[in-house]
Length: 324
Length: 202
Image 1 (tube, each protein chain N blue to C red):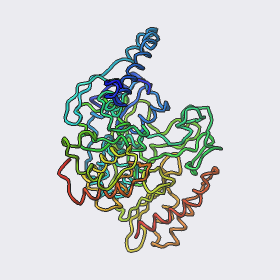
Image 2 (spheres, rainbow over the protein chains, first blue to last red; image 1 turned 90 degrees about the vertical axis):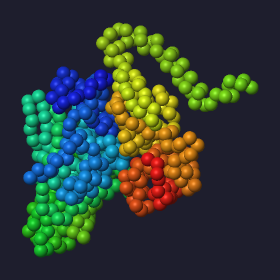
Image 3 (tube, one colour; image 1 turned 30 degrees about the horizontal axis):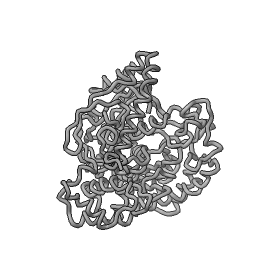
Image 4 (cartoon, rainbow over the protein chains, first blue to last red; image 1 turned 180 degrees about the vertical axis):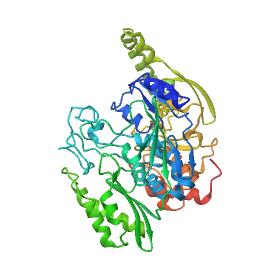
């Protein structure tokens, strides 16, 4: 690992200022992805600002929802009673992600900021528009079994690897950020972005901004399920995952929120399927139709063509398990 | 045979040869760095670090880029914690920080200021092994043994976290520790044995 300057920040303002003074620097929280990237030379910060001492670890209830500090540890959020009772979908997604050791280190903000695990992004001898803009996309005509089928561009077909983020997208969360110009809020579904012409940008965070927390509004979803399909039974990134949150009353779907992981550059909301399901009775035929509608615009790139068949089956299965 | 040589283990030899190798590269590195004074400061600046390892308080000075794993192995010579993949994929480097299991390869040593670390060396009480260590022996929970320190640290945490209520749950919550020999069934047996018998250790 190439050495760097190390600073411990004692306040959010100090952290933001320290980064502003050195734009080639970065924040470090859990470090589980950043240190990995630094060892491989994918990310080479000249200054690391350790933000672990900032007071951003609390999980707090308000009248409208629950806010989670950016530095709350993944395992602690997953097992928190407020979260388990109000947002079981989020706890399920956490339990499906990484390993117990990593979940004891990873923070909520860091989970959002993690980079794709595309092998071309990780291999510094390979072309990658995300790592080095203008070099091309190695995955487009290469090894792309793990890659995206929705919202891709010719520049990048990488996927966002998080499970937590898929649940937060389905739960209509909001991200709170702080920067030199002050604080602002970003809808979770607007936080990560599609690759377009600039796949080097994973999200809509402005230069120098820091995530301070995430707020999830209370909801009336009484059926929740997180389905994750991977190459082994545990501790692997998703081939695809499906987050389902439904409000069902008297056999009618009153509300539906669906999101997928492993299929796009960001957590992928299934808005067409949601619209179709709302107001309809719980019925296997309707689940299948919703899954079919969700496939609009899907495109395979060779090795990942299997996802075109697997995704509708998975959506159907997740919906079925949610109501079971 | 030379008496001294006989006494020396493989590790002692490795330590010496590593120190020698460090000396031989030190000279050109300093000369090169001399061309740019600012770079020297960045490259050689060490940060004071206080932490407790297995009940012993250490006041150290480390480069920011040193991981907790490398600090334990290279500076404190606690080589029980293993470096498997060094990328958080295998769990061989699992240690407890303030009672929680983590991958020591993915945390910088300097991020652990004031923390209490427990490694595999800190489990036994003299010649009395920790119940999890005994269980691994009794259940034959290892073959080559390289993943074993990490497995044992993880197994203890798995029980402490309350995630050892069934074989299936143990399998899921031990999934961060890879065993290339495939001793998994016996590792699960060991964790289940300790869970069943109860453990008055941490």
